[in-house]
Amino acid sequence: MINIYRQISEFTERGEFSALINFLIDTLSSPTSIYAQNFLKYHLAEAYYENREFTKALQTAEDALNSLPSINDLNLKGNLENLLGKIYRIHQRYEEALSHYTNAFITFKKTKNDHGLAKVFHNIGNVYILTEHFKKAKNYHEKALNLAIKYNDKGSIASSYLNLGSLEYQQGEIDNAIEYLTKSYTIFEQLGDKPSLAAVNLNLSEAFYVRRDLKKSEEHNRAALTLYESQDHKIGIKTVLMTRARIQKFQQAFPNAIRTLKKVRDLDPLNEVVLLDLGECHELQNQSEEALEVYEEILTLENLSTKGEIISHDYLGRFTLEQQKYLEALSHFKSVLKALEKTTPPDMGSILATKGNIGITHLHLKQYNKSLTLLNQIHDQFLKSKEYEELITLEDNYISILIQNGENLLALPILTEKILPIFKKIKDRIREMQYTYQLCFIIFLNGEENRSKELWQKSAKIGDSLPIPPVIQNPILSEVDRLNLTKRNDEFVVFLRDKS
Image 1 (cartoon, rainbow, N blue to C red):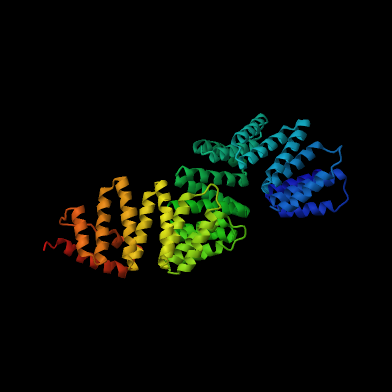
Image 2 (cartoon, rainbow, N blue to C red):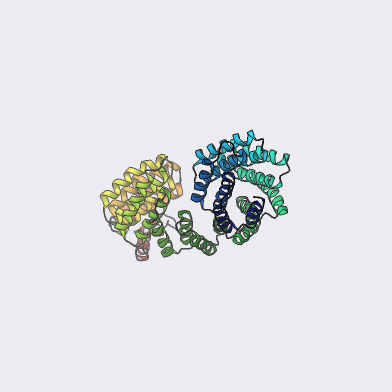
């Protein structure tokens, strides 16, 4: 057994877990005692765990635990319980993980195995971090640290600092996180523990990014990537690249972020978070066709999140609206609204904006009753939430489309009953005069020249310069319509200044 244990240690130190699995399976095929079989099964389960074959790890560990005689080594039982806790944690089955950790704690306490207890405290603390019970998490990680310091177990001390650093990071205590992580880094570097150094570098990269120290964040990011690549650790590589993409997005280096995210997609093609980031970067780079392709791909994913559904349909709605595919746009915006109405608590700002998009689409389809009815419904809701600018922009777009469609009479009540009262409410005299001028301009367009002039003369003194009607500046207009309206405005200016 001593020779076998030495070989297990050598495989583990080299990180050759596939080779270790084959060695243990071969060894188990030879006749051995029940204790030896369970000892080998424990190490086989650990090798499966390290090789990320979690289903096999679970089956092997449970088989070994169930076949342990009552008189068997309690420390082996504690190690198996601890390993099962780690496997259930990976599967996000946290209650079962805590149950196994508790069994391991009871067993190690009986045998006074402080090293085992330190491992259990460390693992329980990690579960409480994942379930956001941060006070409990800190308590267990400090217990693990105290035991590690008691026995001068450098590896465990470094692991405890790493976990405490991660905990402080999760709570937004970035300076404390960096302090713990730096201590962890120093010890792991002394030990030459490359897998753990990779994890510390990754955490430091994240922490320095949040502190906006991008130089240090990039340094640790590169170091983490080099270490993970040397281990062919795909999950680590993916996580590092995701952090790198966030840094590149913050620097507005969108082409670089796109290249980085494509590398992540190659590693994990069906990852919704990666695809959403990639779609956003294509948008920010004004690559509409590429963004469209990504968002369409997202909508084909199984177990799509509500967030992914909302973001993807919203982009497709905006894209097809711009392409004048109004029925498609309407369908996408309705899907967004349906998804938003399922969220708890409801995001009223997004709901109102989406209803606004549906109303605009109805306008383009010349379904005026539907569109104006919807605007009447959401106008008061916007006012109640005091989202004045969003409401003004929406109603501006309504007016522009109605004028573009020659429906001047339908545009007038939106100005008189909706937009102008907002400017009076918020005491914005400058914009009140701009939109009063626009009201006069629309009346002029409608062929009521004298009425338009009389209204303007009541509202303002005619000076050397007159406002430009906001409708002319609205990007929703086509260039042809903008030029036509500019020409008509020039005519209106001449008419207003004519003193005859």
